[in-house]
Structure formats: structure tokens, C-alpha cells
Amino acid sequence: MSISTGATLIRDAKKPHRTRWGPWVFRARTLTLEYISLDFPSYWIDLEDFTNSAGILDVIFQIAGKRWCSITDLGHLVRAIDHLVDPQDNVCSFGMNRRLSLEQLRRLLREQGEVSA
Image 1 (cartoon, rainbow, N blue to C red):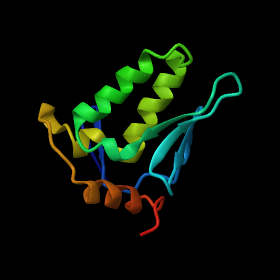
Image 2: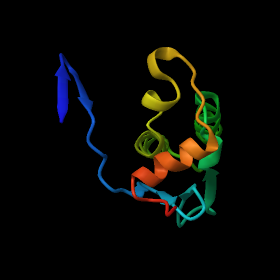
Image 3: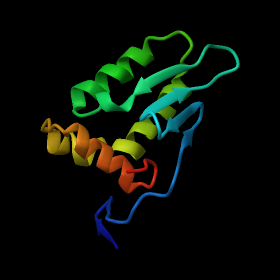
Image 4: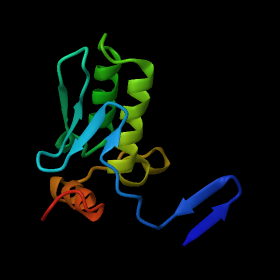
């Protein structure tokens, strides 16, 4: 079911199954996002650091400073984080910082069918 509120669409349906956003690949077994490129070495992001908005922003700005990460790749990273963690609902709703426990984060990923229990 979806509820439309003006220009905003509120969804309560599950997001489609995804594991790749541009060069970023979700690794369910290790709870990581991996950057894969033929031009640069692989780079891993530990999703277990994403229990609050500060952890997420730290990673985004850290990656933004890497020479190998294009603006497009950074956009793909933001989309991957949005899809996997849903930060606006889970860690920064209405501009308020919230914290997920590690178990809550793992459960969130399991609900997408990505992580085996």
C-alpha cells in the first residue's frame, strides 16, 4: 500500500531485491559494500558502522575525498546506503539523530532477504 501526501509518496511495501549500484556491490555474508573497478583496487565499507547518521555521513565524506571515486560513483553509494539502511526512516527521521543497535541493523538487512539469519 502507498499513501500519497502531496509530492511525497510514503511506501510500506518492501523494496525490490538489489545487490548492485554502479560499482558498489552488497556482500551479505560480510555486511559490506564493495567498490569494484578495473582501474583501482577494491574498497570495502563495513555496514556495521551504519548504526547512526554520523557513521553514515563519515563514510560518505571519506569516500567523497578519494581520487578514485567519481561523483557518479558517490551517487551510487548514496543510493546503495538509502536502499540497504533507509537512513531517513531509521537513523535521522525529521532531523533527529537515532541509533540502531547492531542487531536492529542486521535485522533490517535480513528483512530485505539479503542476509541469512
